[in-house]
Image 1 (cartoon, rainbow, N blue to C red):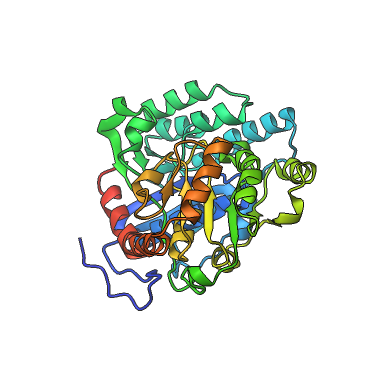
Image 2: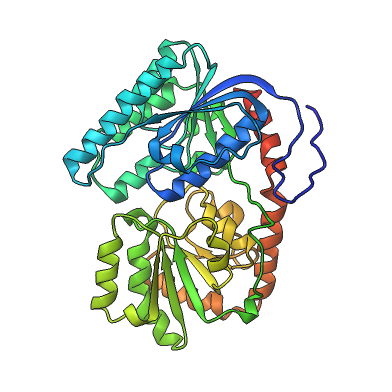
Length: 393
């Protein structure tokens, strides 16, 4: 492998190294604005280490994606997504994505050697089957457990367990964020085809500490998708106990999602609205400024992969309290790089928020977490890992 170039900025997007001969197709459909960032990161990484990248995704992603990779080798094939939130429209949307993405896979059959399924990797059986019929190598990059998510979310017009079983059987490789997820997501029987890589990298010129922790207002926060599996309802239920212990404290809730109206109503009914700032969707450009206002970020999820917001907060010198799900325990060591809570019950959240804020080592824990992220999530380090992974697919 060719050595990596000395970087001129800490973001590290200018990486020199051997270009892999692969021509890669990526199928991914982020369900919210937040999903655009990890997909954009993946495309930027692949465009630096592979010959060509063909992205099959939503029109929303095409509009949001900025071709700042410095290369001409990214080609986007948009798929129109019908709107609607009821069950019939949801089923129609998902079926349409299956059909349209399968058609696009066929269209790029002579341009690709490898198809990577990202968002929806476990459940998009149709494009996966088309890829295999066309004799393409197939890799599943699992950003989370769709089985855990659907157990929390509820309705799906297909059988998630069956879809996951089929895709995991026919794929050549499964790419996970951490070896620990093999056991957590019951993937032991697929151990022989598992590789480890992630698309997470940060621009540390942007995500950095601008306000020292001791100078920040008494503010805690949740920033993420407003959906059931993220545990946001449990966080709100924990707020009365937290506010009772800390009368000076306020809370920030940032993000959008299908629970937005219900959350606003719940805050009003519980008399919490005067002490909670509902910021709505926070753009990626504005995120560092918000994170530098927080004394603590809470991630009360039922299920996760490797949340970007956790890494971004740590880079901004904001301590994180999270449930030990997904790859989170690989990053947060309780009392060293952040704080872990046993579960996301309101009582547990409240108890651990108070514990974290009262920790005499809070500033040192925050600094250790920041140093960890800066060491492990640079572009050059992640790109080197992807070169290795592509060479083993």
